[in-house]
Amino acid sequence: PTSINAPAALTLLSSTPTGRREFFYRACTDPRMGYKEFHISGEENPNMTDADKRDLMEELGPEEYDREIRANWGSIMAGVFPEEAIVRAIYDGEFLRIKVIAENQTNPVEAFERKFQEWVSGRHEACGIGHEEGQLLVGADLGTSAKSPSEILIAEAGGDDLDVIGIVSLMGMTWPGIEQVLRIIDREARVRYMALDATGVGAPICENLQYKGQMKCEVLPFDFASNLVVGENLRKNAKVWSTDAIVSMLQRGNLGLPDDADLLYQFRNHTADLSRGRPKYSKIDDHIVDAARCLAYAFFRDRMPEPALAGGRRQDVECPSTAVVGIREKAAPQRGKMKVRTIGVF
Image (cartoon, rainbow, N blue to C red):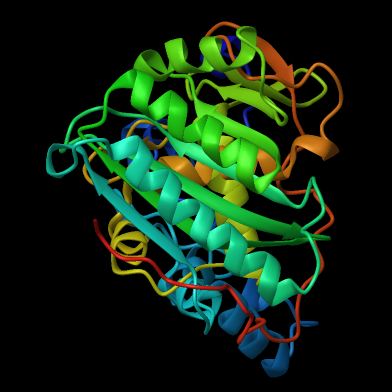
């Protein structure tokens, strides 16, 4: 800011547009600011072949290709997750789906426990052996009302791949009930990491699970308002980082999504306002997406240097940049995996 405002300073701004962001967008489009704009598309590179363009278009999708390669401005309100990448991520196969509506159950926790144990038992039978501890990850966005439910994603990690194999929705359940459900998942499924949204109302449950003990897995509080260290003297908002991580995995074919109407609706309709520099994400129907953000944090946990817990709003924690994480690109998305038993609403 100081150099930009200095009268004798020569300022060069260079960026790939990701939306109509405040200063850079105005510098390029408002002649009163005194800048001269040079627009250079990646397609002008003489070394880029038609085959390269086709491959990049397939990998990024039309909207992302237009911004990243052609360097064109995106819209102010832009979709967060590319539709083409979402379609490629959907796998064929069964998965766990449990919806608990607390007001319809005398004891919703017991009802959940029976169904979850049934799924775990079927999973062990399908695998032929007991599932090894440390293979499953959990990400959860916590809420107590019907309009703000708790959404819990269970995923299987293998190498650079992460497949969501279970979705649990808790509607209108009390805080003690939610805590019991998370403890049941930990006890029955032998989870390695459980990352929980600790922004605001989720903090008490995180504290109870951490300090009361009896959890086999490692509980990771994830505060969306905290900052993550992504490089020397570089920090990134936790919510922005985790969103970028999901986008990166989707584009590279490393994230598998079940064919679930609620999950796909939220992924396809999640938007960001890019008019003020840092993205401002939509807050409508975003609970499964927030659970996926927590899941991304759990997935990359082993690649993070210490200390790496994003539990405090003002805490700076170290975390890898999603731009440099070595994720292999798949030739084709995996399909037809055995996910074992689908359970409906109860």
